[in-house]
Image (tube, rainbow, N blue to C red):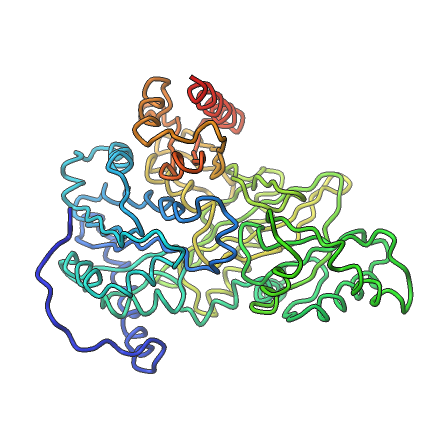
Length: 516
């Protein structure tokens, strides 16, 4: 379990970002396709998967999410890969994950003795709770890099998987000598708010009217005034940081009382600091503007309507170069203006799941041509008008995201399949599956509950996944429970209604037990 082994001296690694590193990375990436084909053809073929669930994102933006460092635990769903009998897993985290949490996931494995699974699992930790990205922590510890390498029996049958891929993950892949199942960092612009709008237009997918690649306060004011001139009835516009996530990097500007004519832009400049309302708690105009100057952003029309929803499409481009639709979801949003991601329901409403699936396919083809690799999600705003739904695309999350781990949990537990044509997921026996998932089950009353307490509560109240019925509850983000009073859950049922009822029952049980 420890992964300790004899370390050998190796030549100095190439300088990060150097031509030598880029060349080595390119050579490693060419190994992915044959490895993928071999595993796809034989689930019993030996392989090692190194999971580094680093949220290599802007630290200040990440700090807006309570308990953000525990979000590494969302990829503990990858432990389900141990159901393949000759697959080894190396899972690296910032801090040690309690044994109670590891055991919780391993007990979910269908048909695999716990001891057998544990024997193929190596858990490693940086013992570092700082805000630095996990991947940077690993790179700063050469001996830890050596222990990861020692835990890989055959580098030719191994790959690295991460939450998102940056220059840090590229460097780690080269240091480990294994390919990265993720995007080349040179493509990261395509996952920004500005880059996404350009991809959508290339794919022929509608976007809200707006402006991208903005850099400063003057650009923001000019864009807002321009939108108001083009749409005199526009009531609000949204300002987004290019690299914000979960809606925390968004702000809303109100045009109420705006003048017409030449006075408009001057009025916007004057009113910007006072009228801009932020999704993130405690955000200020000065700080927001500073981040905007660092990463740039966009301004676009706020989409209005009597009934507005925000579905998403999860896609994958595999190492063989095949793009596919993995799932559709309806997002559960909150925050001051309903832009913060709280959870999701699966699958998306049948009234429009095919529409967003087809839009996702067009975007996937564009990204495939650009060389994208791995999982990504596309967010939409959908408005019902005169009995039909209209959709505009607003964002590409060119990485794993909030809809990745719930779907992987469902997939690993039930071994079913998603049919993108009818939008349904069914088990091998033909039973449809639905779920309600949340990363934000939160209450001050939950603070002080330990992972062991949660397991006791789950067992005593029947909050578990039943393999026979293919329904039940799976918890995640368990490590955030005691300090932050926060955890997540995937509630799987045989209909949208039963999944949501199971979620509400789960929250009711947690509330009751926390009061005892």
